[in-house]
Image (cartoon, rainbow, N blue to C red):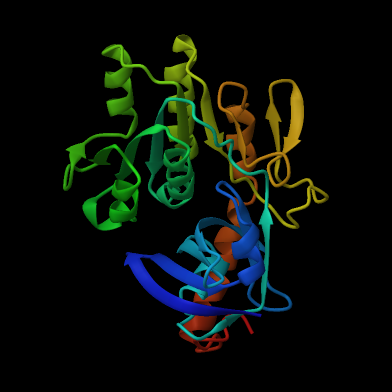
Length: 287
C-alpha cells in the first residue's frame, strides 16, 4: 500500500498526487515511471514520476482523467491508499551538459518534461522551456517549469494565455533565427511529437521523444508497448520510454494507439454507470 500524502486538482480533470513511496523516491531518475494498480483486479496503468523527494520518501504523480482507471483515481483523497505502486521503471533520461536544450511539453506532457528539465539545468545546460495547453485553465505546472528554465514560453491554442498557437512555433522561430540548439526534448500528444521530429530532422538537431503506448506489466514480457525505432522492435517500458524522435515509426505508433479505443470507451461507460449507482465509493475506487 502507498498512502496519498496530498491530493489536489491542478486543472479540470487533472490531479496532483503526492504519494508515500520511499524506496521509489530514493531510486527514481528523470524520465522514469511507475505502474499503479488500485485494487486486486484493477487495471495496471503507467504514470510518469513528475517529481520525487527522497528526504520525505514521496513521489509526485500527475493524473489526467481519460480512461476508467484514471476516473477512479480522481475519486481518491488525501489519506487514501493505492494498493500497488511499482517502480521506478524504464530507462532514465540521458542527462549531461549538452549546451542549450529546448524542452517542449504539450498538455499532460508538461508533467513528464519537468523532472528532465530540472536535471538538465542542474547538469549545467541552458534550458529553454516551451509549454502549451488548449486553454489557460488546462495549463499545469507553470510555476515549477518556470523555476527550472532560463527562458520560458507559454502557448495556448485559443490565445487565452501567453502566446496563441502551438508549442512547435517558437521552436521553428528559434531555428529560423539561427539560434544554437544542441538538443530538443518533446513530450506530449503524438501529433505534436511527430511535428517536432519533422521540424528538427533537416537541421540535424538531436531530438528525443517520450512514448506512452499501452503497457501492462512494465517488464517487456506482455509486448503491448512495442514500437519500431529505426529497423528494430523496441519495448517502451524497458528500452524507453525515451527514443530518438527521428527513428520512431509514428505511423505504426498511431495505429497501435487506436487499437484499444473501443474497449477503453466501454470501460469508461461502465465505470460511469457504477459511479452513478454509487457502487464505487470514494477512497476505495474500483473495489
